[in-house]
Length: 499
Ligand code: NAD
Image (spheres, rainbow, N blue to C red):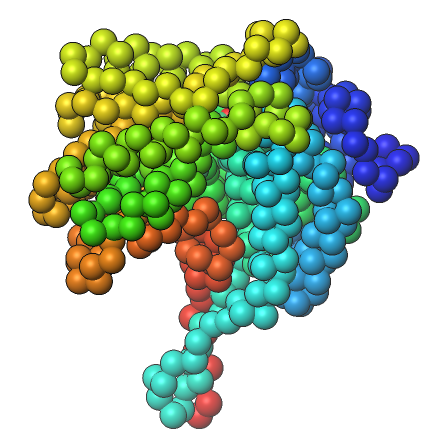
């Protein structure tokens, strides 16, 4: 470990260089067995600022074996002691909040003020939330017979593999690591290629408090590092957040070993605005719901806005006016609202859908805000937010996840039609209804095929509220006590004959 580890380093480039070409296994930064690394770029400039370790099956094997050994003693600690250690680790993170915000800004191109500081704060809150739940890992007593004491206890699963994406790397990592550790498991994380350093740094800081080996992290490519991790015989649970395609491959690896898997996958979330909605509130809500400040790179982004015909044109006008006010620019600039897209691959995906939309007869792509003109950002991956109107309901732009700053706005006349449209994609992650009509709000809540539904708001994922999808958006839940108990422990039934 670096000598000055506990002093926050507010030079993210220097910090990333210090962490270059390293995994964290058994409490120590270690080089990958192959010695190989890959370039990591700041997407707002495309400069290469550091190299991340390119993990492979041998690194996976080393990390999982260390974790399996460490887990045995970790599981023997009283649950509240594990919780206290996690809380102490979270307090250490607190001192590094700005440092972590700057690292995630550098890696992802998300704006420091509107996105990165919030992520740093929320991920710490997640550790604190689960730390306080340690004593809730309870089983049940069963009134089976007066002569038999019957009960269940919850036990940890062993080594948990956590595979995470880049869009909210620390936040989504915490949703997996915190409950897994509190429940007595050890964890091996595979970070996202685009954002390996903020998660490595958070893990390094937490390892100042946690016993070596309970929280390990590897960087590397999906199939070459994530694949062997999911398939490793000593991994007893895989929790994955990412795309549907990769999720299926991880689920297959888990199925071959008959181990449980949690999948948090993509979305194409509907936002239904009924004719009686408060229009100002709905427009404000649309700005937040589409996560424009994150370039729409959110699994629950409201990328299908279904607006009653009577409000449609005014809604589009007001929404465009709002999004126009956002300043797109250098993610480190305090004046910036919207940073860059994360990677060239993601940039190309967005361009592909923009081309489809622009070529569709009758469709209009309303471009909002301005791409920055500063010379140092000339190679940056900036895309104007786009509101598409006039697209047919079966357009790929309407039905497929873009994971970029592109939303579609479609009119409807009839409530039932809006609900049918909302349910018409393969996804089922999040949905919102905007209305003052209680009956239709409640009816809609029941009929919407989604794991997370809200009326007149669209809050982001946060600890305490179970979160997760149905249909192709995944299986399992995160962020709550139930998720910790159901997804990171198994139940053992114990009978004691008293006669
Ligand atoms: P991705 O699937 O490409 O990558 C996610 C992670 O999986 C990365 O760490 C990657 O290296 C790894 N991976 C890729 N292929 C793998 C394989 N064959 N085996 C094992 N690991 C593999 O996704 P992404 O582009 O990083 O993230 C965007 C996707 O994530 C979107 O679909 C988005 O909706 C989804 N997402 C979902 C949630 C949620 O909570 N439901 C949250 C954020 C993002």
